[in-house]
Length: 267
Length: 239
Image 1 (cartoon, rainbow over the protein chains, first blue to last red):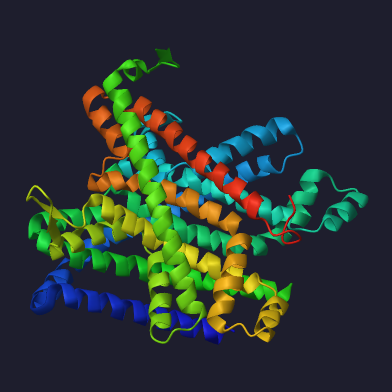
Image 2 (tube, rainbow over the protein chains, first blue to last red):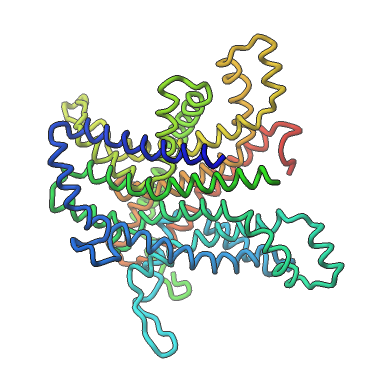
C-alpha cells in the first residue's frame, strides 16, 4: 500500500509543478526566461527573508516557525480544553464546549486581528518584561482556532476507545484520572495522529494569513518584491508561492491519508 | 455605551450601522454565490473523476490536490493578479470599460475552487459509501454508468455527506473574510474602514467577530435542517 501512496505523491508533486509551469508559460510567453531569472535571484529572500542564506526567520521559513510554535501552543491548550470536553461535570463541560464552538466557527482572520489589538505590547513574567512581537501575536492568534480543533480531535479519540476498557479498569480499582492517563489516552493517541497531521497542514495553510500582523512571512516578502519589481512579476511570484506551499503540505496530506487507511485496515 | 472598559458608543452612529449592514449583506452574497460555485465545482469534479473521463480525470485530480493543499489567500492573490493581467474587460451601456474579473468575481472564483476541491473529495467519499448492491441492482435494470452516477450515486452521496458539507459551508464563510484584502466591500472591509476613523480597533473587531459567528451559525443551522430533511432512513447515525 505504501508503494501506491508514494507513487501518488510523486505523480502529484511532478504533475502540479508541470501544471504551474504551463500556466507560467501561457501568462509570460517570451518573457519567461527573464522572469525565471528574477525568481531565482529572489529565492533566498522568499525562502529565508534576506538575501543572505545565513539569516533565518523570514519569508517561508517564518511560516514554518510560526506553524511549529502555534502547533505546540495549540496542543497544550487543546489538551486542556479537550479534557474539559470529556469532563463528567457540566460546569466544566459547558463553558469548554461553548469556547470550542465559538473558536471553531470564527474566521481566522478575525481572530488574528482581535489578538493584534487584544494582546498588550509587552508583558511581565517573573520580573522580566517581554515584547509581544508581531511574530508572537501571530502565533497566539493562529493557535486559538487550532486548539479548539485539537480539543475536538482529542475528544473524538478518547470517545472511540471501547467502554469495556473503562469498565474493566474501574473494576481493577483505577480512578478516573488514572484510567485516562494510563489506559485510555495511550490507546487513543495513534487514532488521533492522522487527524493531527491534517490539522497541522490546515494550520500551515492558515499561516498565509499572518501577512496582516506585519511579520516578515512569505506573503509580506512577496508584496515587497512586487513593490520593487513592478506588478508584471506578481503572477509569477504567486505561482512560486503556491508551489512552495504545495510542496510542503501535499506530503503531509498523503501521509495522513496513508496512516488513516492503515489504521482502518488494522481495525 | 461602556462595557468592561470597552467603548461601544460608536455603534450609535447611523453611518457605521449602515456600513456594517451593507458589509454583512455583501459577506452573505459572497458566501451564497461561493457556495453555488463550490457545489458546481464539487459535482463536476466528482463526476469527471468517478466516471474516469480520459485526460480530464488526471487533470481534475491534480487540480483538486493543488487547491486543497495551498492557501486560499495565495490562490486569491494569484487569480486577482493573473486575471487583471490578462485585461479581459467588457464595455457597459454607458461606454465605460469594466474589468470582467473584478474583486468580487475573483473572491467567488477562489472560494469556488478551494471549497469546491474539498467538496469533490467529500462527494467522492460519499460515493464509496453507497452500497454495492444498490449499484448492482441499477446495473441489472439496464442503467448506464452515467445514469447510475446521475440518478443513484450522486443523489445518495450528497444526502449521505451533508454533515461534512455543513463543515465545508462554515469553512467557506470563514474564508470569505479574506475578500477584504483585495478591497471587496465585505463586513471585514467596512470594519477596517471604521477602525481607520475611530481607532476603536478591539471593539470593532469584537463586533465583527460576533457578526461572523451569527452568519456562520445561521448557515450551519439551515444546513442542519436540510440535513435532517434529506436524511436517508436507516443510514448513518440516527441522532
